[in-house]
Image (cartoon, rainbow, N blue to C red; front, top):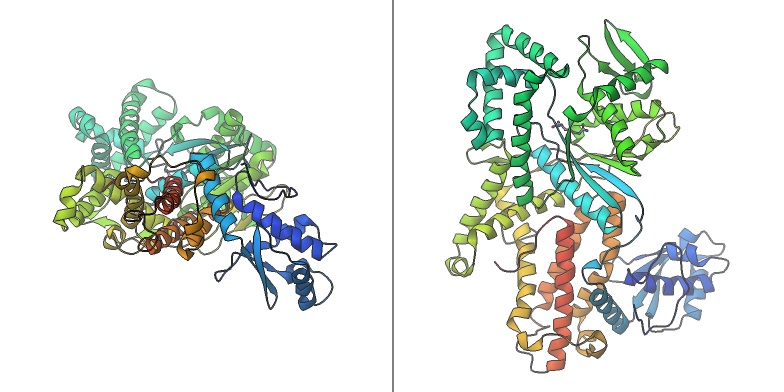
Length: 608
Ligand code: ARG
C-alpha cells in the first residue's frame, strides 16, 4: 500500500500491507518500547489491545512486568509522547494507557487499503503452504438429517472459508454414514417396500421411509435382524450382488444432497464415507495395535483399554468380525493422512460424540502416528426446538422449505414492499437460509477443542461448557433485532446507494477524494474504525474456530451504518465533494460487510 505516513520498523508476525491496524499498533508499540527500555518492540506490540470503552487502543502496563510503579511507567510514556500522523493522543487511567488514533489517517489508510485490496481485504497469508482437511456435515444415508448435521454443515462451511481466507489449502470432506448393519436392514426392507420409481423421485425420503418401516417389523419379527446381519456380512465380503442396490442408493442420495448443499452455499471437495474406508486399513490398524500390545481380547471381541485416560474401553472389532464406527474412523484417518499429508485435520462433530472422538484420537496417538497431534475436534451443543409446523424435521429440504415459507409469509405482510421484490421466491429462500445460519452462528459454541498432545501421557482437552441453544423461527426470521434478514437488509441498503446515485460513479482514486467531511463525523469515524478491525476479526476466528465473533462484527458494522444513515447523507448532499467522500465510505462498508457475510457462508443480496 502506498502510504503517506512515516515509515515504521517491522515486527515479526505483522503485515501492515494486508492489515492496516498493524501499522497503527506498531506506532504505539514503538513509543512504549522507546520510553520503557529494555522492553523490546515485539514485547510492547503484544501488549497493544483494542480499547474497551470507546478508546481505540489500550495498553495494560502491569503485563510487561517491569520494575517500578505503574504511575511512573505511565509518566515516562506520556512525557515522551508526541502526536504524529498515526496517533493523536494518549491518556493515562490507572494501570492503563489509552491511545487515540489520528482520525484523518485512520479513515484514509483504512479506506485506501480496502480499495486497493478489493475482495482480498481481510485475507492474510499465515497459512501459506499448509493444508487442512475439514470434515463436516456427514449425514447418514437412509436416516434423518437432523439439526446436529445442520450445525456441523454451517460451522464446517464457515471454518473452510476462514482457513482459505488465511491462506490455507482447504479440503472439504463429507464423511457419509453409508455403511454399517443398517444397510442390511434397508436391503431387507427394500425387498418388501422398495419402489424404483419412488427411489428415483426422492431417494432420501424413500430410503428413510423404508428404514422406518423395516425397523418396526424388526421389533416383532426377530428374523428381520438375522436376515439383515447376513446381508451386511455379504456386503462386507464384497459380494457384488449385495452391493449393487446399495451403490445406487448412495449415488442418488449424494446427488440429491449436492443440490441442497448448493442452496445452502456449501460445497465439498470429496464425498467420502464409512464405506470408503478400506478393509486393509482397518486390518492393518488392528494388527499394529495388536503388535504394540494394546489390544485385549474379550470373549472374541477386541478392545483397547483406555481407562487410564478416563476414556473407557474402546471396542475395535466385534465378535462376528464386522468392523465398527470407531475402527472405521481409525482406519479412515490413516488413509487420509497417506492421501493428503495434511498439516491439520478438523472434525466438526456434535458434542454428543465427544467420547467417541476422544477415543479414536487417543488410539491414533497410542499408535504413535506423529500426525495424531494435528487432529482437532470442533464440537458444538444441541439445538432444541427446530421442528416445522408439521412436526419434527427429518430432511434438509424440509428445513430449507420451512424457512422459505415462513419468510415468504413474513414478507407478504408488507404488500407495498413485497410487490417491489423482483424474485420473491429466491429472496425468501435466501433470507430464510440466512436467518437459520445467523441464529446458529450467533450462539457461541463455547471454545472447546480436543487436541491430542504429542508424546503426552494424557489427552489435552479443553472441554468447557457446551452451549445448547433453542431454535426459534419467529426470532430468526424477523427484520428487527440481530437477525439474518436484518443483516441482509443492511447490505441491500448499502448496495442501493450506488444505484440511487449513479452521477457520483465511478469514484475518483483515493488520493483525490476529500475526506474532510468524514473526519468531522463521529459516525464516519466509527464505521472506518470497525472496517479497520476486520482482518483481526478473521484472525481471531481462525484461532478460536468460533463464528460468533464474526457475527458480532457484522452486526456492529450494520448498527454503525444505520446510526450514520440520517446524518452522513449521500443523496441530497449538494456538495459533490462531500457526497463522493461519503459514498466512498459506504461502498467500503458494503464490501467489508459482504466479505464478513461470505465468510459466514451467506450470499449477500443486492435487492429485496
Ligand atoms: N455420520 C455420523 C452421524 O451422523 C457423523 C460422522 C462424524 N464423523 C466421523 N468421522 N465420525 O452421527
